Length: 108
DNA sequence: GCAATGACTGGTA
DNA sequence: TTACCAGCCATTG
Image 1: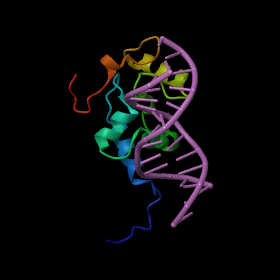
Image 2 (image 1 turned 90 degrees about the vertical axis):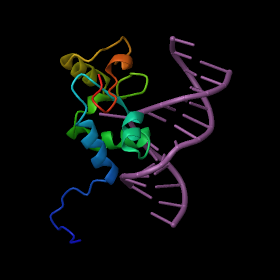
Image 3 (image 1 turned 180 degrees about the horizontal axis):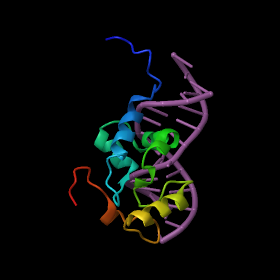
């Protein structure tokens, strides 16, 4: 293989997968951090959170929430506004996981 | 190479 | 119901 000198994005392998998957989440649906790690068959929820913290701004980060439906720590208000605009099922706590959780396959 | 970090999770009190 | 604790594991310093 030839090393490509024009590679400005030395992203960690995991980061690229996370961003790609998050970008695939349909509007109005969400995944938990643990779900993302499980679908990627790699790492864990903490690793997904770290990727979002660093590179999340480049994708629909608000569609990734905590397993209990709470919004990302430190971005609750902003995420909430995004979900309201997309029509995501919400509860008083955050996202209604029973209705908004995406299975990663397209099944409603 | 080693130690600490973190947009987490599930279980227990 | 809420609050706290230990485990988790790639990435970063």
